Image (cartoon, rainbow, N blue to C red):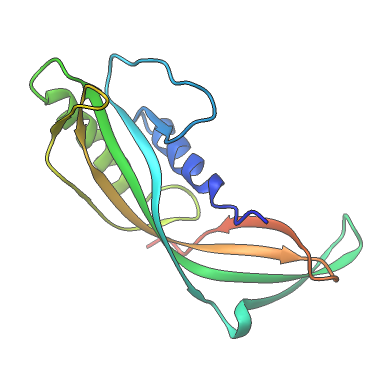
Length: 167
């Protein structure tokens, strides 16, 4: 059974791209093309989920498309994203700094729908010998609701990321 977490990395990458920050997900299914500009590589480094209610039960709903009742379960989760910036080795790191500034600007706006940014931080820019690029590690911590729906038999039929109230 999928936990649905594979969609979360794509949601963050999509949000960053829509705000002018070039981003890709880590470990893509197809080979990536070499880029001449900085890019943010999105990974999910951690997920802490806690109960939302008794046995994570949030209630039920009637699905008109199937004419059946469904039960909804969920957890509030704290997601730690790796948003590492990679840039060509040439230059003095200004490209990495400009990419971080754009990334910080996008994150300050609040993050993707359904995710509430708690904090973000970065490390120093270093030369990554494995990729032969400059790299600045960045982490962002967000909260979100992970929600799953079961049919009357108890089988999970849907999984989605649900939002939190934006501040």
